[in-house]
Image (cartoon, rainbow, N blue to C red; front, side, top):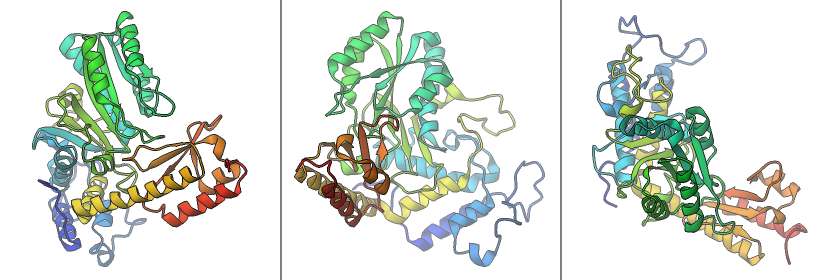
Length: 415
């Protein structure tokens, strides 16, 4: 693996880097800083014990409370927190270059509150881009995605007041057909839609399915439509590019200009660590000039953000290194493969993309008792058709075996 930025570090190296960064931030205790509307965490509630904190870089970053407001890859940002801003910038570059195969120094981004915010950020940018560059009216712009896409696109449609088109997928393959996609594009075009914001899935939340980006490009070009493509890798971003070395959903594809990743899923970071990455030159379409008291202004949806979240993701990736991360994904792949083999032996119908760690089983094979016992997630809580199992780090072969045994004992299995 030829990584430009992602190199494994020792625990001491990680600790030193974090503490050096925090020392380059403002120190509320020793400096006369009067104008910042923030401070370290409340010492009456959160321990400031130096003996404890000196061995805990992440906990120290929480206590020191750096604010990562704005998008630091753009250049100017608040100098009070320049030390930890540099770590976030390195994290964004690592993800853009070493995971998503982009060229160095060609992408902007930030650690968002989650995949939902990152997806909305992308759609916000492209809506404004079409309005600014093409004088498009909002009713001429639409979002297009598969019916398996995350509900964050529905939120974006509502918030940004632009329509959404959802393309039906085949039930067993979870793929769109070219005929259905072309038909829906032509209908939208006939109704006045001229500008399309494509959400291309890199492992959907329910099925772990991956959209065919070439289908989108072929159909939209044939319709002579202006479009921009955002990849929603909120689940798959830290998994699929490792599991599938031929992953087509990265910045090598000239049509992909932004990607969402979500570190609080497969990377096991604390919640609140979605990642948004976009090609340089596009963040300007959402710059909020009214944020004049913020150095560099603000181009993010969320505004103030905890620097500790960015630090957590950086620490996780550096602790594992690329080879350690490959091994982690390899183990999960083997567990998922073993589980699928057991389901096949029981003649249970399920969906599983080979490069995914999500296995989704048709509801007719799962009784309510098993759903509750094993914490299965349905596609719909009212009338479920599918239940999913996600092979995460805590989902061992032993736990999967217990599930298989429970299935064998239930009357839902075709023996």
